[in-house]
Length: 483
Image 1 (spheres, rainbow, N blue to C red):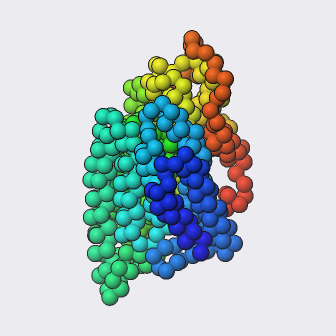
Image 2: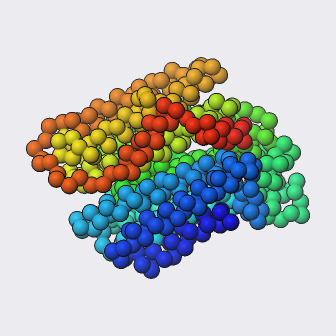
Image 3: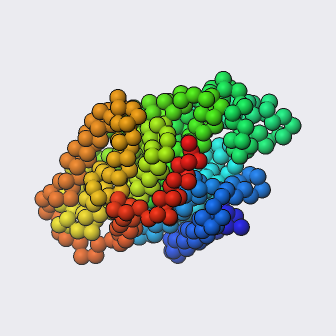
């Protein structure tokens, strides 16, 4: 019942906002629907914690400690982003960048996007997972192109084409997965695509076919993760879309795509009895982290800067899942949490900074502390958090990844350390003048509401200082399922 509410609420909200989304009260309605989804997700979490096991609903959907953690995180950030987008999009409307009809499209597609991600996270059917990922792509294409400028339309087309190619490769991998399972589970029809069935017999699946399927699935879903060299869509989509869309793209969609990759990795490792799938994840992760760190130096747009930062951090998560084992998986799950919270908070602050300065160019944003201390401190603290400075939670997760790499893969440690150092220097040197630089602009008497920024950063700070035992047990259960 709880899962039905989690999935049904945003779907219903998308339909309602498709009709009422042009009204002035649509922003508040979007917040209420997102809050209802969050409450339903909290009830689902309590049920899973209470019974301590997996729940299967009508065979097509299931919930375990791994995906219920991501469902809760998705619902939370979906709600806080809806809260942030209420004043932000109204300012955009006042500046003439959007009109009432485009706001209707924004609100309805936002809820459809949330529904697609929640379906992808909770489905038991690998085919339906592919459909949900495609639905998430199509809805966000419309959101990225919301401003209808030449740059936003170009970014949306690049996003659509590159992710379309990726999702096509993922479809071929899914077909190969069905081919391998159908021969073993003959006569069960589409049940051969149910993840619980596949996981139960993964040791008997043809390793050659599963290995080939995993290559296509990794490249396909890895495109949506933003792994290099498949990352080219991500910075443009972040830079040209509305800031709330950048927040959910970086904070949520990348996690959902990573979830799909990890589920496929579990099957591949069980079928192949080999460390090759893990090594492939490590290679993609290390390459993404290093490349993104150096590309950060070339960025002149604040949202592109933090878009490349997302590529770097998804590379760290991919590398950690590739190493595998209890500690590395625990670190990856923690990093998914703190990265999502921190990066969405940064985009909230960066969006208002761009509105204040009238530009997204880094050299055009100066002296935020003097102009608007709320935005200035939000951007500075968010940047320090994402750079892994203690005592924020990003430091804790990165430290756990590093000590695991030093123990099991010492050859990779220097590459990680260099990439982290380069990224730290690039972002800090670009953010520092934006916050502390001199400016002739007058101080704004009414700073925009940035409560979600500081709520997110407070949670990240708390996770750096202390991980509650219940949450730690949750991470351990999820990490044990990944293997």
